[in-house]
Image (cartoon, rainbow over all chains, first blue to last red; front, top):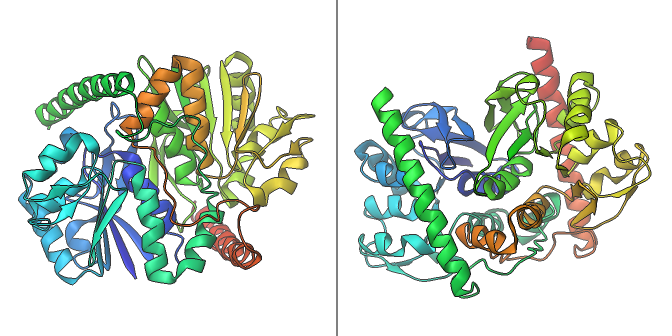
Length: 226
Length: 226
């Protein structure tokens, strides 16, 4: 069972690392981080972290499981990258599971995989998602056959446990849950639009705007350098 | 506010990336990944992922916040590395917060910071932790002044939200929670020894043993090559 997780400049690290931490523990699987070009990809928090793509897209044309993480400016750039979209389409044609986390759903949408379907993504990306012909629902994750879209960032962890159970059975999923002590005890309860106060929502929108502007500037500077 | 997250060969990725995804979103902070030597550090799941340390330990001698992740064979190796332990001791002397996730507590223990204290770690590392004079408790995280130890892997996310609230107030912590949609909905409920069945516990111990053996072999091969 081969798992491919897509990396690209400006991704959100936890979108990729959450599912990786669960799925890489499944027996008899090999997990590969892939990108348009192999090498370091910096994440969307001022580039503070770089994850390495050991493989390029052509190295892993037909993974059994495809995981597409999201990001900010980086996702919008990747959604215009025909090479990335063609790889997603070809991989999806033969995959057992095709999944996205957060705004990674926009890449599935841009590849034409979500037309006419209900799907989920980061709550702030719902309008962008619907431009691809999908209907946004505020669920933790949504499955249609072998396609699963998960909500923002941390939702990839919950989706990965569901997927682990589909692949290796619920007892294996439970063992991996105990292995990574996934017994969440958030000290606050503001993790969805439904649970957050208006004050929290306003502050979050402000943070997202500031970070998106910073990230756009970083990506532009990077493009200028190369 | 400068945050340093320690990387080393064989770390558990989510131990580092969970807190990073929360703390890097705090306003007016700079977050740096540091290691004995800068460069790529491979994680403890067959080395499938490599995170980059942009800085070496001497580049970041006095971070305000110190985050020490865990791992398997890698943590035991790091706990014998006098350079790493001296850095932890010196950084702790001037830090505002000194924290560990999972078996990262063993590094705080080896640095002599946990003697006579209650502390937590991955449930499978409790005996190893107590060799350093600490008393293990099965809590999500435990605070003594500026010292916080968190339980296994995913517990670093909960600890980071607590820390975010101490640093920037609960409203900022809630905004970051909404930003990363941290509204956990695990499809199973086996994330602690107290909640898991004996069947799950036995299977998990078996997985941990297999992975530890693989990881030791990978580290030995690596040492042989270099």
